[in-house]
Image (cartoon, rainbow, N blue to C red; front, side, top):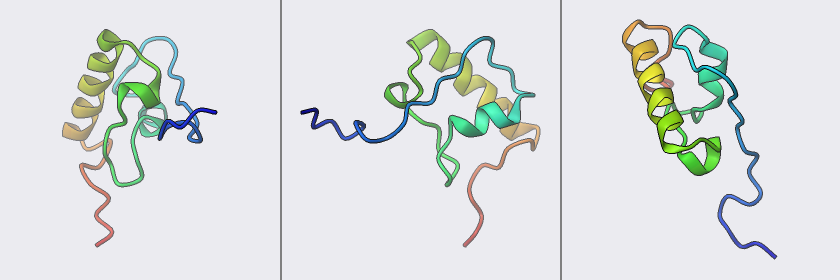
Length: 72
């Protein structure tokens, strides 16, 4: 029996090139509050996670993604 805190949560699989213009794919790698998911949840290696983080930050800067949920 696996007692990891990530055992019952689905993994997000992002395959191929991560681009800042693919907003739907980037949203899958974020929580509903707007935080980026970690490497354990995305299933990426460190190089891919760095590219994902850069793409999310670029999309936020260009107002394609929100910085926060802003529902409060």
